[in-house]
Amino acid sequence: MMQTNTRAIALTGGIGSGKSTVAKMFADMGVPVLDLDVVGRDMLASPTVQSALLDTFGSGIQNEQGGIDRKLLATQAFCDAKQTARLNAILHPEIVAFEQQWLKQQHAPYAIIEASVVLESGGISRMDALIVVLADKTLRKKRVLTRGKQDEAMFKQIIERQCDDDMRRKYANYILHNDSSLESLQQQVIQLSEQLMKESL
Ligand code: ADP
Image (cartoon, rainbow, N blue to C red; front, side):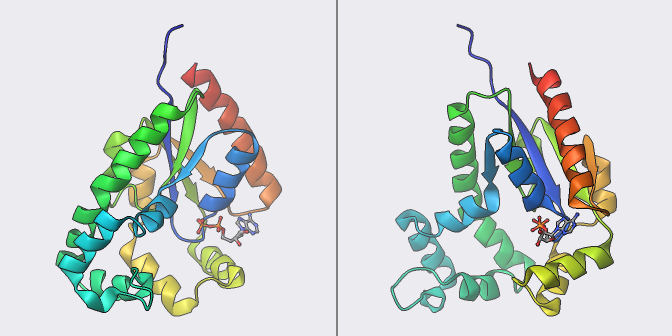
């Protein structure tokens, strides 16, 4: 039997746009989904990554158990562009290797790679297409605050680190509009999944 590659469809959008909601809708339909933010987080448990991070950022990023404290690491790594580049140089190759391995193991016509910073990181060059979720910024803020994981200051900080929707639009092959109900979003996702399936066979 001929082996065809699973197409890598990136899924991105600003904080609170509804990316994770869309990813879950695809997953519920049986589409393989990989969240690169989670992969990056899990990498912090790898001994090789840990020692590289300690060499670069010092023991001040360690938690009481000797592991990496994500919050402390974030304060060190996001204080300036040079430090962020250092963090990326350590994590990036590991994340890419994991993603490529994961893709090889999939037996679906396409898979969704949820990646909040796929444009900022240059990861887009590895992807076959890009889905962008768009929603009005005020609505996004409201949803994020209701979600409760971040407060207003954190929302502002994250939005400043991310690129804007004009940039996302430029790279998008498919756009989902999440300014109204979850039902409307679900309808758009169903339609898009049918389109992606046709295009990927
Ligand atoms: P992201 O992953 O892009 O940060 P989420 O998918 O987590 O965003 O969505 C942010 C919050 O808004 C979540 O609590 C989610 O349940 C909610 N949400 C997303 N889309 C809608 C919508 N159309 N209507 C109401 N709430 C929504």
